[in-house]
Amino acid sequence: MVRTFGVEEELLLVDARSRQPLAASEDAVQRATRPLDDAEAAGVPAGAPALAGEDRVGAEPAGEPAARAEVGAVSSDLADAPGGHRLTLELQQEQIEVVGPPQTSLTDQIASIRTGRRLADGAARAVGGRAVAIATSVSAGLPHLVPESRYRRIQRHVGILAAEQLTCGFHVHVAVDDREQGVAALDRIRVWLPVLLALSANSPFWYGVESGFASYRYQAWTRWPTAGAYEVFGSVEAYDRCMEAVLRSGVALDDGMLYYDARLSVPWPTIEVRVADVCLDPVQAGVVATMIRALVETACRQHREGVPPHPAGVTELRAWSWRASRFGVEGDLVSPATGRPTPAGHVVADLLDLLRPVLDEYGEDEQVQAVVAQILQDGPGAQRQREAFARRHDLTDVIDTAVRLGTPEPEGDGVP
Image 1 (cartoon, one colour):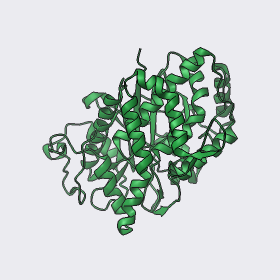
Image 2 (cartoon, one colour):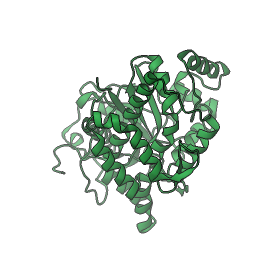
Image 3 (cartoon, rainbow, N blue to C red):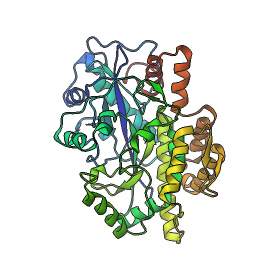
């Protein structure tokens, strides 16, 4: 049976006129839960013109039901949303999350991702904004906390980490049979997560500054004490002991604050892979999600065949992830086979070789190979952002490019 997978995408809200971050997620989600008038349905709220030069390609997003008890824990169901998508709040008022339903194929996942982005952008347009798929804010200025009791507790607990935290991740849920299979998969996917981070990298700017990183989101995110790489667990009991020890320490206020690169979902029978940036291009997002699904399926098969997990420790994996975050696919990645820097294309090829039996079985290998080759040749979203900025050294061009390449037009606008 084909393993289902779903996506959660965190998107940045920006003002449609100024392109600056827009603190409007609560209003946007509330607007999305009621019928829109004709202008709002068309995505043209009063006083919110389209961005200059908007001439974008259609797209739609996807996802799978996921735990809503992490940094963002407030949700608002959209009962009439197409395909079962939901919009939810996150920590900051300048971001919104789309939670999509489970899918079974790459084609459906890309369509679902486009649908979700269109839904989020429609909600943003209704309050004079746009929803864009970039993983950090390109503009200076700190964000605004959503005024909810849990967020306030988190802010008091972590201080400046919460004050500066405006990042947009890409979380992929993959169905597992039970928690034992989930832990076995977590143990075996760890060493390949830095490669997926590199392929998704989409955050070179940090509050108006060129960071030098392909994914600065990952650097900002892993400042949190319960984020990043994790050890081999070996059993459900060991996984539970580790999580309980962190909670007992008081460092994490609840299990939603266990932010590791991958984890067992609490309410759903899935593992949640959280390492990636939200991708600029919805097709590339679908391919990254599909690779994650194939990696989990491969890991489950390895477990059944008695293949042990790679023994790399957290210290090594943190170093591998730092390199992936810094250079993306433009520099070397660390090869799990050797532990040494190796041209990114070679390491990605090794991952694709590992996944090929599953991708072939699911009929997705050819499309995945083609899109990954494009990422290796042209770069992921980080490269598109830098190219946009280089034209005029104007950060608003980065937002325009993100809208053009990553935010679908409302249906019926005649855009192919």
